[in-house]
Image (tube, rainbow, N blue to C red; front, side, top):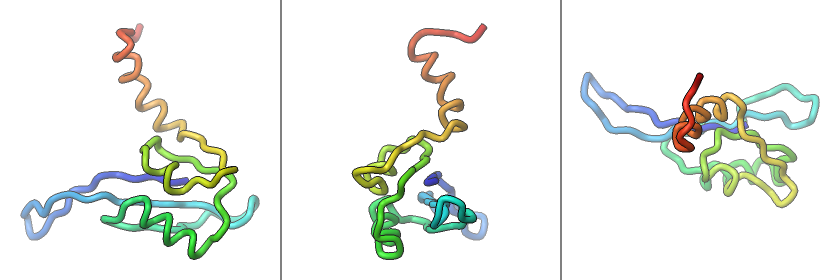
Length: 105
């Protein structure tokens, strides 16, 4: 599972700008325990993928992501199945319905 978020940096009550945090959680085997495979602040998904490929040469069998465009491009292999995170899909549903000029009951 790969997810990213924008975070606001602060230093002694001053705005220090923003950056991205990237998190990849997974298991090494189908029945294995979940563990943090990569956590970075300020790196793009290509840098995360480069580090992961050094540790895990094989592409993942399944990738769950939040829908951010760079994640599948960087982390998927030719036979990787991609699934959008259901929580993130639900969060974006209202906006998608709004774009299609549909409203909630």
